[in-house]
Image (tube, rainbow, N blue to C red):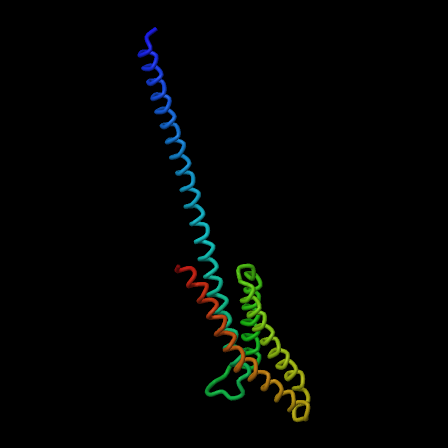
Length: 188
């Protein structure tokens, strides 16, 4: 028995087994890396789509907020210059914009952060106060010229000034900052 041949055969076997094992490990590693890369690409696309959709919803909610604010401002404005639509047309437009805003928001509420939800609910409560005082004033229209009628007009104007003129712009500014913060996160 030749020991040199035995060691030579052991060496060839070891080198061969190591080489084949190395090739198999390399192939499995490449397949695994490819699967991870494919999964990563799908995840990036899915999350970028979600963020793009979210930004579109945020932009639409803000656009509808501006429109609702403007409509109710036109309706409640005590003095107008130039031609004005009929009271009924202004009411319908303001109510349509108001319901459009909050219906759209409720349909998409799931995408908003808790602090944004709180802020939008505060805005809704303020709009509700204005609508309630406006409807009360309209109800008192049958008693035109009476003291309760005058008080309902004063109350309606007071609520309008407090909520729409003073508070809504502040809340809208906070909402705008929150939305811009969301957008900045998308740009990072």
